[in-house]
Image (cartoon, rainbow, N blue to C red; front, top):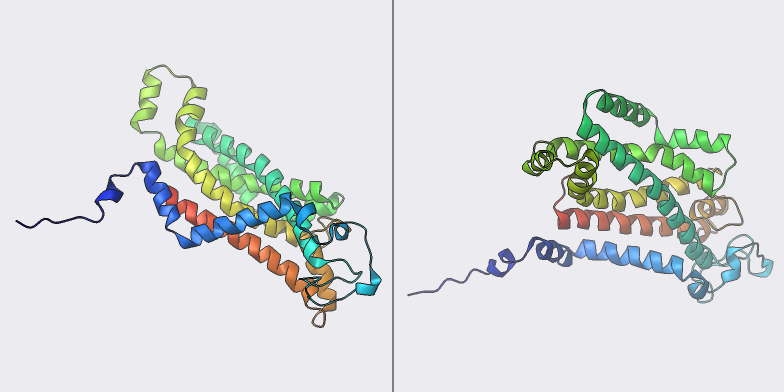
Length: 293
């Protein structure tokens, strides 16, 4: 008698949570994304200790070292007033992550709640919420953000407001679609028969089934928020000097291309690095949680 060994048997015996972490652990791109995001977060948190020249994050000038190319003392060179570009990039991550936390911390809960309400109650409530969402989605995001920041004084808070006013719409549509698909499931009907309140069904029954999709969406959105914030700063409508911001650094450095290329290329690479990390992490979470976008 021959014995057949199934190599996939141990995998099939894993729980759903163990299977999810198994998929993430053996996804090299997801691990790379997690490493990049972690490195960006750690650089932002420990900027005063990591930055070789912390004073470069403020109103500091050193004209003797202006336009210095990359070297051991200045890994990313110096800018037009002698500030260390690498130090300013590290502090610039603080601004970018602060923008991500501010925008998504407001837009995600607001959009999720509207999506839950529209999908659950239906009728005129659904029509009102979803048609307003469609109107907001029809507005070009960058053009709308430029208009808002042009009316208000350009700074980090107003840039955050401009992006937040449009970002909630994507989460509303995502949650609405999920809730409508879940409305006829047995657990929703069981909660209704048991006399559960609307609040209980919305936040204790339906919302937990949306968490996976929201987590994936948030991780992908983080990169786009960084890009939007950098675009506003590049156009002079975001964070203002001398506060270190990646978009502002690219705009200033572009005036010295191609000779002093590092002043624009290095901050641009820093933006690419952060966005790549969040996108790879988002794709990894989508595969890990088996979410369809």
